[in-house]
Amino acid sequence: MSKYNFWFVVGSQDLYGEEVLQTVAVRAAEMAETMSKSLPYPLIYKVTAMSNAQITDIVKEANYDDTCAGIITWCHTFSPSKMWINGLTSLQKPWCHFATQYNEAIPNEEIDMDFMNLNQAAHGDREHGFIGARLRTPRKVIAGYWKRPEVLARIGSWMKAAVGVSVSKSLKVMRFGDNMREVAVTEGDKVEVQAKLGWQVNTWAVGDLVKMMNEVTDAEIDALVAEYAAAYDIATDNTAAIRYQAREEIAMKKMLDANGCKAFSNTFQDLYGMEQLPGLASQHLMAQGYGYGGEGDWKVSAMTAIMKAMGEGGNGASAFMEDYTYHLAEGEEYSLGAHMLEVCPSLAAADFRPRIETHHLGIGMNEKDPARLVFEGKAGPAIVVSLVDMGGRLRLIVQDIECVKPILPMPNLPVARVMWRAMPNLTDGVECWITAGGAHHTVLSYDVTADQMKDWARMMDIEFVHITKDTTLDALEKELFLNDLAWKLK
Ligand code: MN
View 1 (cartoon, helix red, strand yellow):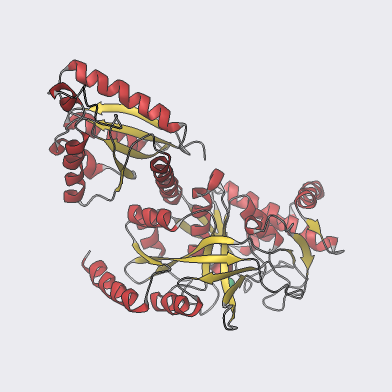
View 2 (cartoon, rainbow, N blue to C red):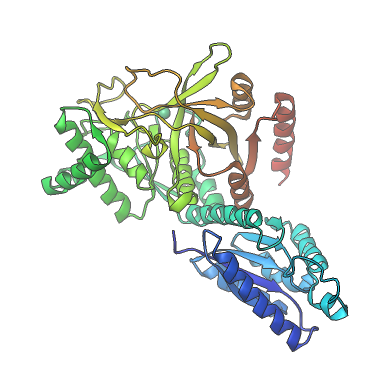
């Protein structure tokens, strides 16, 4: 993910004279360099923009440059905003307006009219803010002193969301077969999704995958099984099942990479020519940053890939998840999340080394018992995320959750498991989630925050719904009703 950077564009005008503008440029370069040391991606000072032509040119350049994941603007001096209209109306990259100031404090003795003319961000940034509001351009506004850690953390957080935009716009999803028959929530308008989010979602025949699997060599399988053994405990004698999963993984990875796909889906209803649903294979691909969705759920697969890329080190602790069953005992109400096989080991608790097991899988076309990783998820605050197609628009639903160490050992449960308490509490949380139309499939993340998903949704121009510890069903119903009206007018 180190290919991405952000551009620092500083607004001004030519009335100040060469000396002031030179000072602005030197300071802007210093600020970008210093801030970059505390940010997840480099911030590169580009220009002190003084005219419509300069601003339009830098926006054109940003739009064209694949390594530029967004622009950060600031007005050290006053920058009349009509100069910005042509540039901002053609901007195709995420925009953050950073309202800051070079000096932290007002210098009591030194302050005079020269100082005032040079340090005008307080009104420069207001003029700059007006044009963003007037043009309805999606932007993030962050105010604060540029050296303060909490301010830099907010910029860094926004940068990761902006990288999620870049990843989204070039994302290709490989579907092995169609969605599970009759399921509604995994459907969606692929043309609308491509227009809005950039995803290229297409299907490949399971037969092509089987053909690729048959071409995988024993040496390739030996190497991958050695990798499994180094990362996981092997708790089965069924070596053939593990080797078969390795064969599936290698073949899928070759097809994904050959087609530039970072996400895939499959379904247990379409495994023609395969002995096992990919379990361990899908889990190990997810651990490498690929998105996955079960039952042909290409939306959750794409969201998993994007949120992984937004996370720490470009592959954070985010994973495809499914709400499976509830523990409704009074005072200890929890959701149990899992999937029939495919839970990413990035969720594993630090003291729980995932183990490879084989078990019978009754559902689907499995001729043989599939190998899969079994582990417990870690404790801590997290979010679950669901993207649903409301017909005419997309809705992104995020719920805050608190994961706990599973309160039961569940020794006969043959899959990885995560246990959590939804906000505001289990049953109210379920009522809110169901009322909003959230799916049973989600991306669960310990890493990406609700704020980042809100930023991402704003940049993607889609509806955002957040269920928090303070959410009430009444307020949520009202919000959904008003959102419905607003999005129909939009
Ligand atoms: Mn499922």
